[in-house]
Amino acid sequence: MNCLNRCEVQAIIDNEAINAEKEEFFQHRQHCVDCQKLYDEAKAEIETIKGLLSFALADENQIVIPEFRHTKKPYSRKKLLFYCSIAASILVLLGVYILNKSNSEEKSKTDILIDQYMYQSDPNKNWIGKQPIITVTDQNGDLVYINN
Image (tube, rainbow, N blue to C red; front, side, top):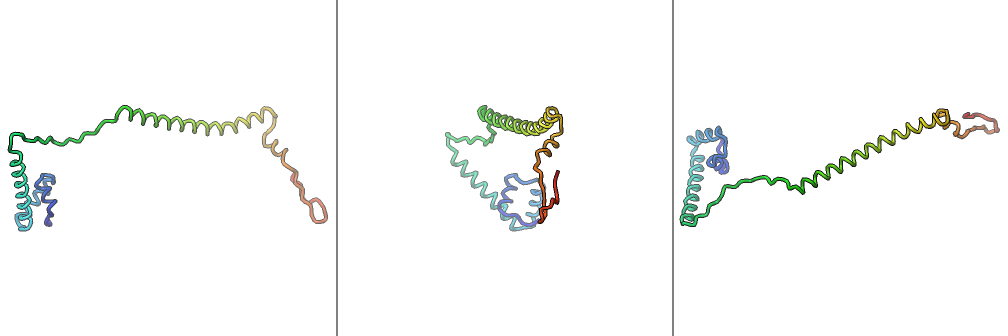
């Protein structure tokens, strides 16, 4: 094991380290003078701070510091209603978009069926009948091509 820094030693003293790390450090501390000195200094500082705090709070009007508890605040009813209404609006808009897209595809199919029923013909033939006639002539004015 390598020597630890001050923060790592403090974590071991404050019981914030894993038990395996603690045991490994205590075994290393028996052979390393620097780590033993660092550990003793940190412990001494903690005892000094505890002594100063107990001296400052020795009178009858002791201040009791409650344990810090971090609790999550539940969502308020207004926020929950707001988020739900936004989600519902998005879903409605998405549904309208999908229905509109599918209706536009169905209109083209419907138009084809109406053309076939009303005109008793294929819409492609109607389009070909409306196509312009193209003629190509050569330099002498002789007819070369007709797209009919």
